[in-house]
Length: 126
Image (tube, rainbow, N blue to C red; front, side, top):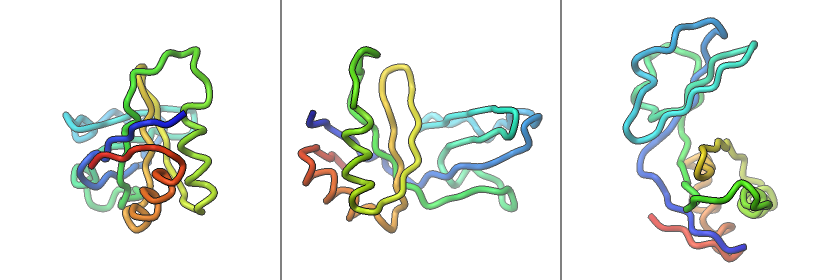
């Protein structure tokens, strides 16, 4: 299934805090933020510039938004994006919302990711 992916401008990062940490104010973003708490950690995905210096994080991510919304009964949506990236040896970070999915790749691999996605029949809009 060919998809349209929108490249979201900016650099993103994922930060790791203690599992019992209070949700910090810097985690909120009008561009994008995702918070996941487990028994092991509190992870925050947001624009890299928002993460305080010295905090454990991984920066340098570019973000694609899959143009949805997608019905929950559809299958293979994310796989159709991840398979060509895996074949091109491009690591990913993925997250989902109610309406759609987001896939992040390192900025250093962005051009290769776009080529792989377009070769798989997807459209990438910048």
